[in-house]
Image (cartoon, rainbow, N blue to C red):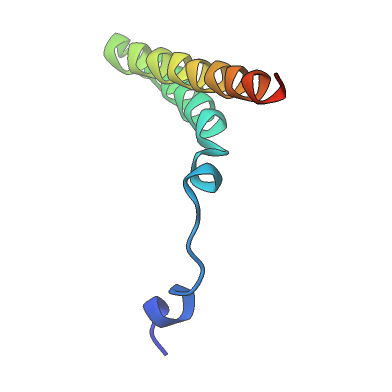
Length: 71
């Protein structure tokens, strides 16, 4: 049985896919920033900081969305 057939029935919703998006952006950003500092590569460190900010923005958007649902 191929891999495609085994997992074909279980589709994820957009909310399930995005649930961990902010945490993965923060984690990968932290790793890239550390690698950039270790390699003395300012471009890689800056890219890591941008990814961390991207994760923060996603998290803020989720909080805002949840607060709007409660109203």
